Structures are given as C-alpha cells and as structure tokens.
Length: 98
Image (cartoon, rainbow, N blue to C red):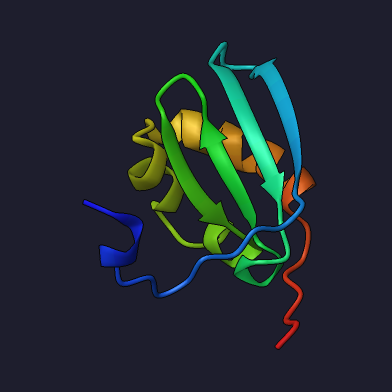
C-alpha cells in the first residue's frame, strides 16, 4: 500500500511538552506516567500509563466523572482515588482556543 492510498482526515505536527514522572502513592501503588501538554484537546493533557500502555485525554472535568479513571486505566477504586489526587495537581484548567 502506498501513502496516496490513505484517506487522511487530519495530519498535523506540533511541538509538545512531556513530563515523565514516577511515584508511589500512600497506598503503595506505583505509577510511571508520561504527561503530554499540547494545544490540541482544548488544553487537556494526554496521560500515558507507561506500565500498562494505556493513554487517555484527561481534563478536570474527566477527573470529576465517577469511575472514569478506574475504567480508563483499569484501576481499583482506591488506586484511582490516589491517582486522581495527583492528576488534580497537574492537569490544570481547560482552555478553549476555538
């Protein structure tokens, strides 16, 4: 297959900033995260759990959604609560640029 055979809906490149952080929660759950900031996704962060290979677009509204972190990152409720506490500090507010 050649490149001209694909039907691209979007194809952009931009500079991003990624923070790599490893920490252990008070409940002794270890997290290895890559937190990518981009101008896409209305200011939400692209959070990657490097151990599990799961990625989600996360903003403060998502953190307020019951069961979101449990379902997205396949975590137990206690571990999701501790991850939420950390992400609340780093996710920030959503910026609408459109």
